[in-house]
Image (cartoon, rainbow, N blue to C red; front, side, top):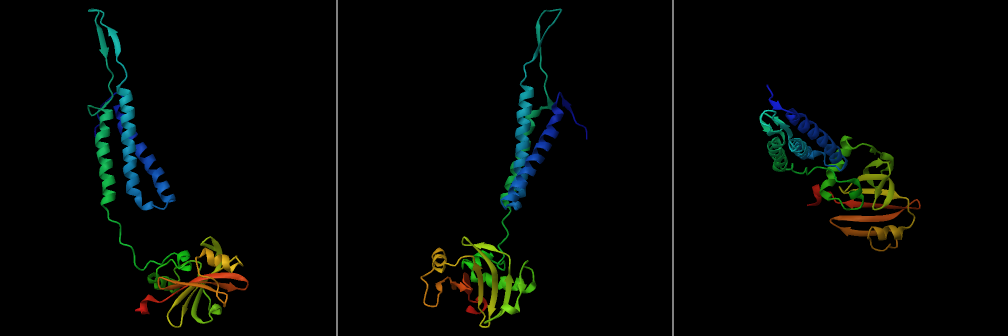
Amino acid sequence: MIFVWSGLGFLVVPIVFITSMAVTLVLEKLLGVIGHGEWLTTAIGFGILAGAAANWFIGSKLNSKPPRELIDPKTHETVLIYKRHKFFWVPMQYWSVPVVAISLLVLFSQKSHAAPPARTDAPPALQALIECKGSAAGIPAYADRLEAGTLPGWTKSPALSGFMSEVWHLPKPITVAGFTVQDVRFGSHELGNYSVHAVTDSTDLDAVAKQLRLRGVDGRGMAREAGKGAWTVAGTLKGRVEVGCEYPNPRIAN
């Protein structure tokens, strides 16, 4: 392809390309940090828009320089010589107009892509399950993935099975409702229900029950609250407060 330019007009291509790439890479990194890596198309659109802005700024500066004044030795008239920077006979700053149009097309194409429907079998967050904030509908998906071994860190622990038929254990500490909990256990019961429990570092059952907004501690040393088809439970285990939630199996609840 043959390029035609005058002055520094050839800079249109590298200005737009380099600026667009640099801004796109920065935005891609930032979107990844905040958890929106799927917005890559948006990052590209704003990168192209930044390239157009940079080209307009530089082109306008170059083409706005005052002309040189020369005196014609024969006529003694003043001659003004303008140095113009063009790309394909067009002042370089005006190439920003089609570049902006391209960026808008890219940005609108991102909006036109409908978000994929949420997977109904996606497991809820573990913290939400322990706090009884997870939907009971997601419990079987969690159990299925535990059975398949696709959730890292979990191990099946027959030794922990008391009144539960199957128990999986997660030794890694996590944060739940402001508490650091460990020894997380996910179990299925003979009657088909599920429960998720973990042990906190706290020894104050009343304080934990209050933070979880549970009713007062009963005579058995437990605080319970029913809600959304599940029970939130706080009790003591070996001197430490244990928190968790019990869920009905939605596959057999109806």
